[in-house]
Length: 66
Image 1 (cartoon, rainbow, N blue to C red):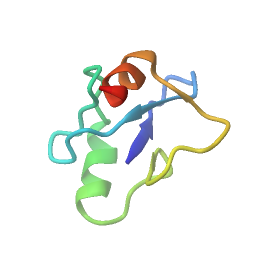
Image 2: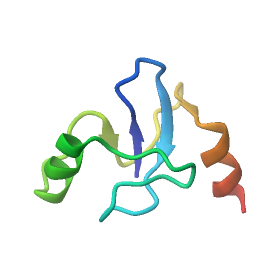
Image 3: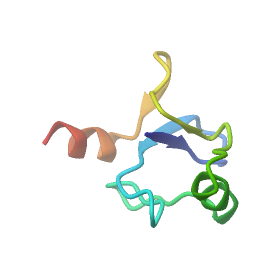
C-alpha cells in the first residue's frame, strides 16, 4: 500500500506497517487516515497501488529497492 501526506507535495510513501501507519522513511499517516484504514474504509490518501504519474519519496524508493 501507498499513501500521500496532506502537505500538498503529492509525494507517495510506502506503507510499511499498517498497524502504526509508518513508512520506511519515518513519515506517518494522519490519525484520521489510520482510523479509517483500520476500520476498512481507507481515505483517498491511501491506495493499494501507486498511481503511474505519482512520485515516490526518495527514501521510501531506496528502502523498497533493498
